[in-house]
Length: 637
Image (cartoon, rainbow, N blue to C red; front, side, top):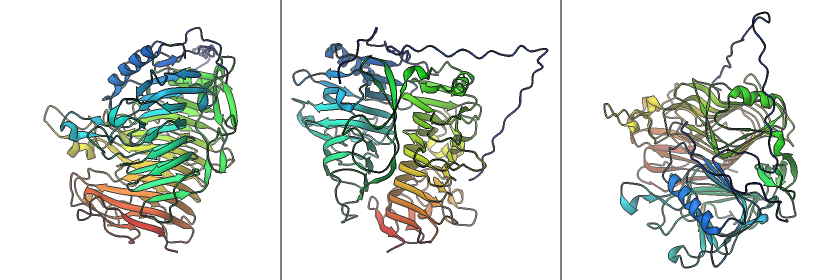
């Protein structure tokens, strides 16, 4: 693709952002004003957007191939230094590269990616932007423990997308010849073309290999991949030259070059030839004339391989001028007015305090977050609702519970019953993450509630924080690890009430009853990862009303007749009370139409799960720490 017309400003200055069912019942109040006494408010006119140089705010940096490599390197090194330990921070950043070449074999550009940072190309194809060097994440060395505490288990919340990496890592000793991507949950790698070396999903050079709990790759063409120490991973609709190693649960869906899984669980590979339903995440790009657009890929059924192999990814392009580009200072009222006018929504990087619901009602509306834009509930609000309208896409958004109880953080579809939509144009959630606790106390009854039919979840992490700053009272020294159960409350992670809901990459952790409760028919899940809560104080706190010990990490309702789950793990680490018992990792109705394929439980050194599913499968406990208990198929063929 030819280089675009130069921008008036090729690089936007960067500044740090200011800190800124069980049943759920929608409530509201009608505001009535007399026309004789009150002058009607006039809605603000649409905000003008320069198609050649849109204002994405102070936390977005756009580089041109004309920018000196030394300057890019210095700025991105400084950004990484700011974000490498900012796990609970408020800064959000996006860094974009205009089409062209960056770095060289003689002068490589080696970029390290910290928390809440998105790195992406602005080409129509990943081949339009090439970084000669590396784009990487290393083990994070925490303050206590020296090199023995260098790990990737908390390398969350970062994104890389839509570019080519020509691996150039000369004279790096242990790191030569590889691009390191040592990450865990809420980390997305999409639309990459990587060549010139290996892609390593572990950092084996910083204090040697350490466990990681990732991860997700989609729509990418990759060299040989060193999986190494990753506990679980999903790679979807991609090409790989090779794949080595596995820990517990490695899933390949629609991947050319995927390994065979006939020997499961040695190694624990799950290979699905074609992805039943997929839609790639929307992405910013600059066209030949230099105008910004958002490409919205079309949904695919029974697909395999990358979407850009034969040219432009199938779908539609939306001019940037059709978007309302929001900043954290915008009110929800202004955002809702823009959506009601028929505009799409871009959330620029930052933390948004949401005191009333953002409502997405119109079919085919796109909500795209940049740089891990974060919506935080205020005063118990429901931050985001998606109505029963086909083709709505929400992507790249993190939703945080606030300090007052929210009934739900994201509701999709009418709470009193969903509507049948076009299965060829599903409502889609891509890289939508949820957090209850972590940087502050969080309270939510349910994180994600799906009532509509024909919904696609394409990579989500739904997390009730197992660590963070919440729950600690410095005045009396109360330890958050033991008090979190009462201060950082999340009852249910995901409730699916709609039919024909598909999830590719469903990660749900630490909720206080069901992590995932699936009530709808014909659900399909490809890779499920769960950790049970670490912090129940007593067995009584972790026992169901009918006396069942604990809650399963994955529950399909008793009246469901059709469901399919491929590649799933439930992990136990009852660190506050290792004597706690959970009866089953999975609970499903015993009917031929409900099928689980390649599932497991594992003990992480505290607590017990007696069976994998419905009384079947071995016990995971302290006698077999780290050794999974596998069930190949349930029910057995």
